[in-house]
Structures are given as structure tokens and as C-alpha cells.
Length: 113
Image (cartoon, rainbow, N blue to C red; front, side, top):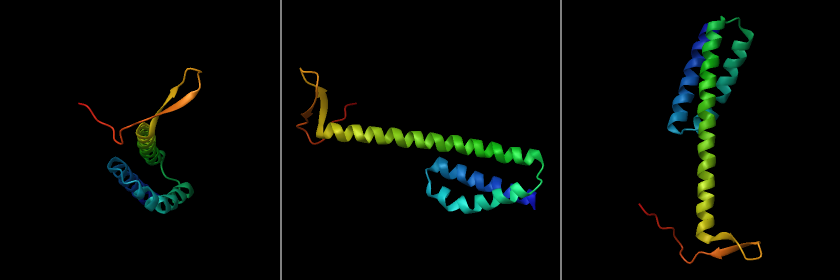
């Protein structure tokens, strides 16, 4: 049973890895119950260490992909926020050293090559 659980866990982690590479984050939500069930099976089993190391390595790889995806999302959020702020106006310092907003007369941002 434990080798079968290891095989299923490795297959599930590969599916998650592929989904992460494609940006299909919803797949992570869909697989969580199955992953939890397989973790429970593996915790109760006496799987050889080499199999558990494979699972561990796959988990570490997926965690790195998740961290990279989260970093990318945060960067995109910052960029979108900056673009939105630029559309509404730019924050500058006035002569007194206080912050002021200078209105942007254009409603769009022009990209230059």
C-alpha cells in the first residue's frame, strides 16, 4: 500500500508542478484533499527512506515554483499599482518637503520602444 501511495503522491506532485508551470493555480485547490489523504497514508506507513526522499524532493521543487509564482504575482501587483498611480497623478515633494500629487493630464500612458 505504501509504495502505491508514494507512486500516487509523486504523480500528483508532478501534476501540480505542470499546473504551476502553466499558471493553473486552481489545480492546487482541487488536489489538496487527495494530497492530504496520501500524506496521512504515508505517515502511517513504513515506506523505505528512498521513496520518502523522492516525495520530499518533489515537494521542495514544487515549493520553489510556488514561491517564484507568488513573487511574480507580487511584482505584477506592484507594477499595476504604479501604473494606476501614474494614470491618476504622480506623488512628488513640494518646496516645503511635504508630499503632493501632480495630476496627469493624459488618461493613458504612452509606451516607447
